[in-house]
Length: 100
Image (cartoon, rainbow, N blue to C red):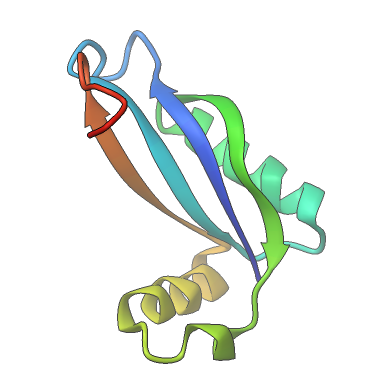
């Protein structure tokens, strides 16, 4: 399983365009390689209305054992094993300062 974080922004036709300025998309991707994981994440995000600006954290292999004690991340990891990808968006509103 790969984990990566992308910085994304809503596309103009997205419901949150003009309300949400952007988000960090934390992704668990069940892929054969780091590049496949990135492609999968970018494609998924594009399909649900988000443009990728940049990679915030490059894809890295993550073992399930690394998440021991973090029930929320374990749940997402396991779900990605079923669905191939799980994305959590950490959004910030339009006009937010860099400190928020």
